[in-house]
Image 1: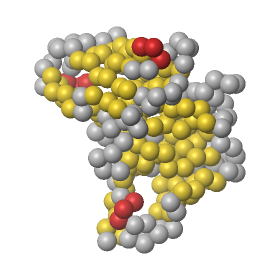
Image 2: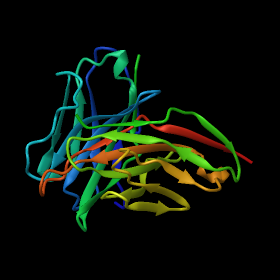
Image 3: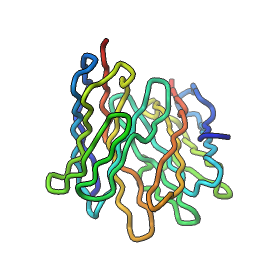
Image 4: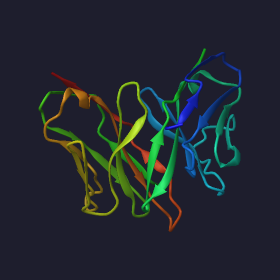
Length: 115
Length: 115
């Protein structure tokens, strides 16, 4: 596709359930990021994949959060035993180093609501 | 650690007013600086960037100058339009050699422009 695609666009779940969020980056982009956007909290970094390097997981808020990137392309963010404070918009972005600097392309996000 | 602090919103202006959104940063290395914009219902997109001290990034009438002495990257526009209403994010990235670092975002500043 032409841009970063995320699915689902909206997800409503019950507290304690597991959820999986999917990101299809732009083809050929080597870097992939997950961010979380909460009302009044701005953008919170979660995890960063760059090529074949070990991912930077320093932003994951707890061990209930995990992410993988298969074949250097599609990524899945998994939240286990969801809590109400997990409610947020989860944004995925991919990038391609271009001329020595990196331009990030964001998807439209997945709105997660935990009831 | 690396971080970005930006002016809290919301900012409300009349059309053709002058805009400044302040952004200061803390970085352990020599960062590249960015402004991203999120229009209502859309994903984030890059607005402008600067990669070294005294560089001025500009796009769509917006400008920001990389000031190393004051560790700032304030966003300005001489005459705002209703269509500029959006959330603006300041961001930085510190690269380590040939390895691109991750982006650190500020909390975002909501701008509303009235006709």
